[in-house]
Length: 251
Ligand code: NAD
Image 1 (cartoon, rainbow, N blue to C red):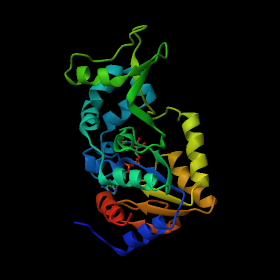
Image 2 (cartoon, helix red, strand yellow; image 1 turned 30 degrees about the vertical axis):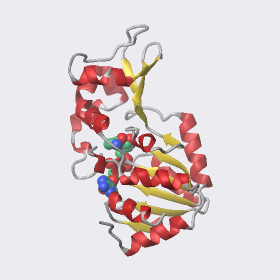
Image 3 (tube, protein in one colour; image 1 turned 60 degrees about the horizontal axis):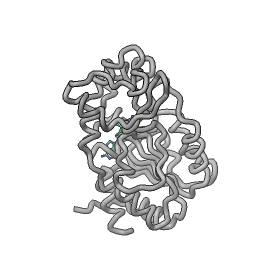
């Protein structure tokens, strides 16, 4: 079923008239793939012990606790498939309307859907590095071992140091090159499309303002309000799946 509402139609019309769209996506774009968000009603934000472990200091203090606490989330990541909202961004890119997807997500679903230019502001769970010698690792080999509890902490094959996934944890710094590319893309776009983000995590939440400062329009599709709503050209309060299906029908 394709759901329509006036704000959805206005948002889709704005997209159809734009040539340099940049999408800023958050955890809300993956909830329909079965991955919980942070601040929605079932969000992991409510789990204080887990949030504590998801910090840089938390990881260094207790890597086994970190991996054990993340088991459910990693299982969700491993079994998730891209949603219609991920696929609709691929179509926009194929039609040369979209310049980049900037994502706060670490689940890799944009690339799995086929998006080509993706800036992963908070990194990815798919690769990792040794915190002692910095050797790179493909995490895919470790997760099944951790899930089946044969392994509590992945260790570096070169020096036996602890391997950390390449995700930006609380109190970690963002990768500078990805941040610079994202900031440039935000400044160059004619429409920023915010999909499924509470816009409460900084510096990611600076990007809509960078787009507005350069004259871009702002469209927000999110189930809950954000502090950018009164600066947006259109706010669509609907499920992203409904929005994506309506948009795909017109692209
Ligand atoms: P958030 O949890 O703060 O906000 C998600 C927003 O999406 C909420 O406002 C919610 O109402 C909305 N939402 C949820 N499902 C939706 C749907 N089906 N349709 C429309 N809106 C929907 O997420 P955030 O702003 O991305 O910030 C949280 C941080 O959490 C990010 O740094 C991200 O790295 C991390 N995170 C990532 C994942 C992932 O990779 N999938 C999952 C959880 C958290």
